[in-house]
Image (cartoon, rainbow, N blue to C red):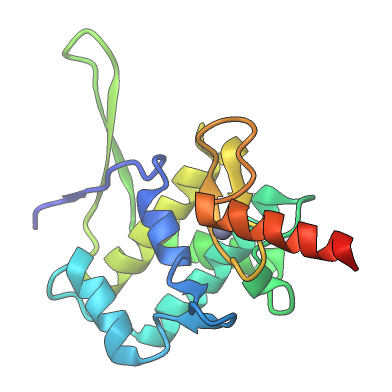
Length: 190
Ligand SMILES: [Zn+2]
């Protein structure tokens, strides 16, 4: 069977996509794109065509990912969506470890082109490949060069994690900054 090559998730794209399935619903509450099993299946299918994965396991891995995100931004507060329901760091570490173990990773080293290249490959398929790839994307990102710039947006109602594009960026997007300024102004009036 052909080995699957696992690209680095250090750019955060996949990890952020996973945690961002919990989002502001536009009306002051929190929406969960993984609420229905078929929505989880569609999200997975878009990235791993034909893979069948237990939706509960994907949600559990997302909780582990969000706990790892929260640990990374600490001592700053986690996303507001998590304040009351964070998984313990011990459980998060165990779930991520187990998921990655399911990949049975091989590191293929190539020194033939004048530099050292390492390709990570897996023989796993289906659920093991999906859960392992997600866990690896999370750990690649949170141990990579962008992790120091990860922030949770603390604007009113926002629950997003984002990567700062410059050192002073405090809000995930302009509209959040505007909302925060309005709220601060209103608080001063009272
Ligand atoms: Zn925001």
